[in-house]
Image 1 (cartoon, rainbow, N blue to C red):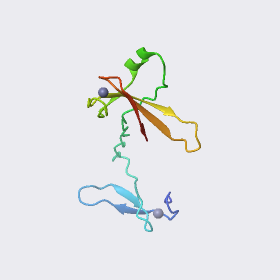
Image 2 (image 1 turned 90 degrees about the horizontal axis):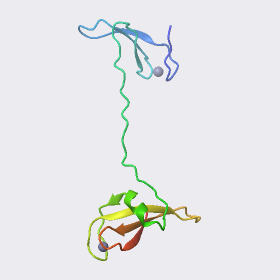
Image 3 (image 1 turned 60 degrees about the vertical axis):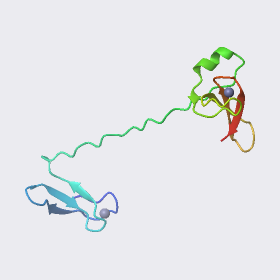
Image 4 (image 1 turned 90 degrees about the vertical axis):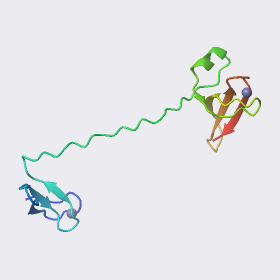
Amino acid sequence: MEFCPKCGSRLVPKKGKGKEASVSLVCPKCGYRKHSSSKEVEPKVAKVIQHKPQQLVAVISKEEQKLRTLPTVRIECPKCGNNLAYVWQVQTRGADESSTQFLRCTKCNYTFREYS
Ligand SMILES: [Zn+2]
Ligand SMILES: [Zn+2]
């Protein structure tokens, strides 16, 4: 005897439709269904790992060479109109805990910021 993991009701065996002779245990209360057939192996649900574009957070540094490792974003430079800029974020030690996004034009090196 098995019970529904969702609501605790007793599961009722129910035969599958058509060709499938597999017996499923069905919860009459909430509709939970459990396949009890040993033949029919439920396909394992593949875990979908969503690859979010990782936004690298780099600490502002005086070392200019570190700019090479910074990610770039498509954003229009307010100075020269170039649409590519390095981006890094600086966490402001404020009560609002907001991070400021700094951007530097890849063309003219103009640095500007954007509040997120
Ligand atoms: Zn149930
Ligand atoms: Zn620029």
